[in-house]
Image (tube, rainbow, N blue to C red; front, side):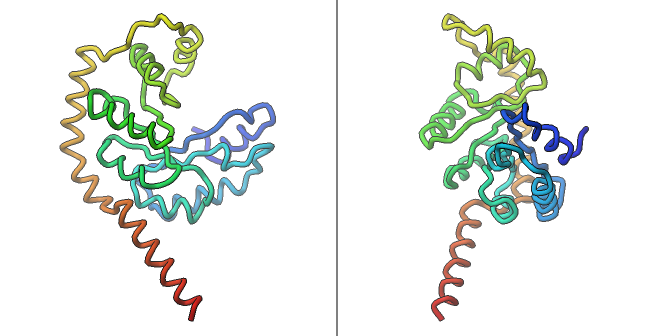
Length: 221
């Protein structure tokens, strides 16, 4: 596993300027420290012809990371990585935040409504982790903006051989059963996630507004 610095040095090569990176910033780190260190590492590597904020997307799981991203890496695009469309919806209030969602939670009417609202807001939508041929085809037909997969070679083959006559890709019975099992897991563990990360986008935006008013009063004074 390469270090982030080594990865950045690799993709900074002139013939690799077309590559971009979605950083999956895990929750099992101290939030302030990991964001500070990521920012320091990015700033330590020369990007080449394209600036890093045009090639690196900051993937965050929880709302508490929003102010840390804007503080340590202002101007960098952000993508919410999630497994709950209910939790993800709050990020529609934040301009320019894209979505990287567990594919299974986008099945059915709830997922369809979420996809519609993301499109209406003009946001990008990525899905993870897609290793099944049928589910890769589902992502293509849903016109998602990116697919996270362990088998990019196979996904490229499907894309390269795509025709307008492809049959509609639908989840199989086994995939629906697996999806129901995932929903039960999410329902079981999501309360603990909310307990560990109780901050919401509204709270963060509210605190930012309060600080802005306080600074304005100090300036006026």
